[in-house]
Amino acid sequence: MEAIPVSAAEDYRKQVSQISYRNQAFIDGSFVGAASGATFDCISPIDGKVLTRVAACDKEDVDRAVAAARRAFDAGVWSDIAPRKRKKILLKFATLIDDHKDELALLETLDMGKPIAESRGSDIPGVVNTVAFYAEAIDKMYDEMAPRRPDSISLITREPLGVVAAVVPWNFPLSMAGWKFGPALAAGNAVIVKPAEQSPLTAIRVAELAAEAGIPDGIFQVLPGFGETAGQALGRHMDVDMVAFTGSTEIGKLFLSYAGESNMKHVSLECGGKSPNIVFADVADLDFAAKAAAEGVFYNSGQVCTAATRLLVQEDVQDQFIQKVAEYARDWMPGDPLDPKTAMGPVVDSAQLDRVMNYIQVGSGEGAKIAAGGKRAREETGGYYIEPTIFSSVDNGMRIAQEEIFGPVLSTIPFRDEEEAVKIANETIYGLQASLWTRDINKAHKVARALKAGTVNINATDGGDITVPFGGYKQSGIGRDKSLHAFEKYTQLKHTFIQLY
Image (cartoon, rainbow, N blue to C red; front, side):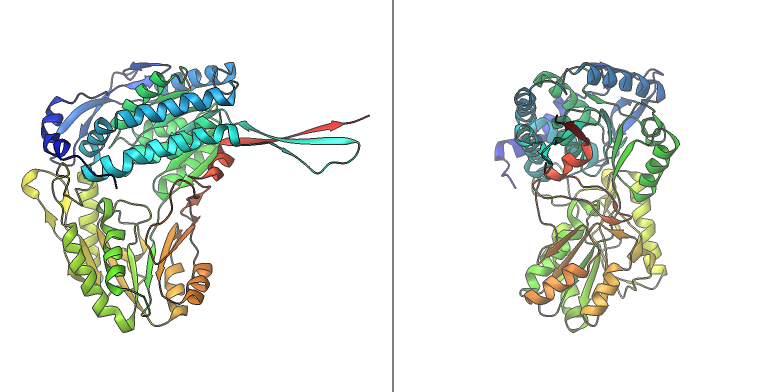
């Protein structure tokens, strides 16, 4: 993580008092209010106070944005320009995001409660790297020629899909958006970003930077609004060629339905998770694994689709390991997100607070025991803080072990041997990520192969960067974000056959 300058750390409060908020939609190169004039409160989870009122876009706004995107795409102002030129513009876009990283990081922290150390040191630099990565790939992606017959030529080319709607979540507002708009723009598409209503501010501000970089009007647009209005309208729109969605499995299924009820648009989904973290008794460093287990579930207040929320521990070391994890949980007690020393902030809003606290009650009611935490914290601030919580004596059939809580809640489950560990790990509707800890390389490979997950970490809980694919098995989704593989979902393959005479 990039170090935060002391001067910046001391000045965050002053910056907050001086910050201004872009709060309108960005359609066809201009900031505009919703056609209906409707707005919604953008509330900071830090203290429960309203930051600004944001345009609440609906179907009429979606229609206008899609029409602008279609005009721009069909005119070829982006898709038909030389790859080197598109690369140059996207690299400038990345540079502008980097130039404004302090402002964007502060917006992210105020908007969804992410600690400033993470916003400034990880999230915004990650967006810069994502956009630059896909920009650099533009003039390095080659088309193909199939094995030829003497009397013919078969060309295989990639073409942009057209109008892509990116419907993104609130837990990593700009990071997840970048995973979508980076490769989609690089491939030549027109992109409409629908940020979550809980965290729209950075996406709106970045739209302005995209225009400054030279991305043509209509090619990059942002529509703040609610999922049931703006999100559904994008999913059902007959002139949207693709929806790229990250969010819950429940809403992901709705987008599949919308595609079937409209134009059979392409749909990519990165949905829920209930990731197992398997600790074998032969782990090389029990202390290091315990520290990683705590980080794996309490990072970002547990609001991570890959959070290692099911801790499977071999019976031989179960009590010792849970005690160590509980000790490390103290390092994750929530604090002021504007303090660079804070590791964990609030959950995103009051609804999420109620959801997580309800699951804690459910876990106790099911017979699980609270080994640490379990209560609200910092109530006097007006914000939405929850103690890092650990349940012991959890059975994998319990709701807290099967349902995605999306909060700082860990369920610990014992197992006897390798076979039982794999069985428990795979007994879930999800398959996004899994982790395992062992010094036995043979066991590591065997278990990794047996786990039904899009990513398997060995002796880690979250590995990889923009260069590797990310996505899930089962009801965790369809398709892959990140890496060069992301181009596959934002392009069409065309075969051109030429008969030689």
